[in-house]
Image (cartoon, rainbow, N blue to C red; front, side):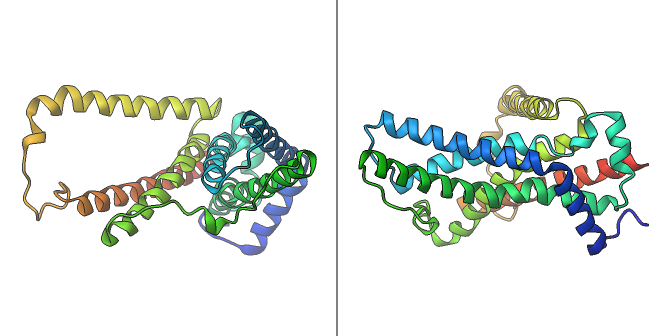
Length: 262
């Protein structure tokens, strides 16, 4: 069996095995997430004199919950890599490295992007109708079509802004996902520390090395696309950089799985 092949039947068996072994954990996670959403929304409404939330507040709460719980959940991907014994057992599972990688990505990152917003929407409306029945408060249902953020840049920039927002959100999940494949113990803590160290190092390099050179006064030619001179060029460069970063992190995670199987 090649480490790079993908067999759908074998992939389905891997999924079933995961469901059998982790159904209680998944149930507890759903209940815990839903319960926390209900409690926080209730406390926030009580603190706001039982005033109903508007679509902007709905969006803010949803982004906050998905970001926090998403990073916590994705930051514990590849749980079998936490000990040597479970790593050996995981590597002997009859599935290719690519199948294990795809499954872990879907069951961690994919489920976050789909399930957490849907669960939040359900609990949000359950909490709203509960307070409407209990305290006779006003509640207006919110649909996902109503929560589009108001972005009014130039038409040429709009598509790249969407790319940047989407790629940035995805990178926030892919970074802890890759860190879980790289670090055995406390992967989320080590990933956050590594990211912080990289950002601080880049900031220090910019401040102590590039700034004294006076590069901010350099005027590049318009044909040099690596040094953007317009807003559109800067957005395009930043968006492409985020896409490359996502692909690079995913490649690193996949190579770490193959490395462990050697």
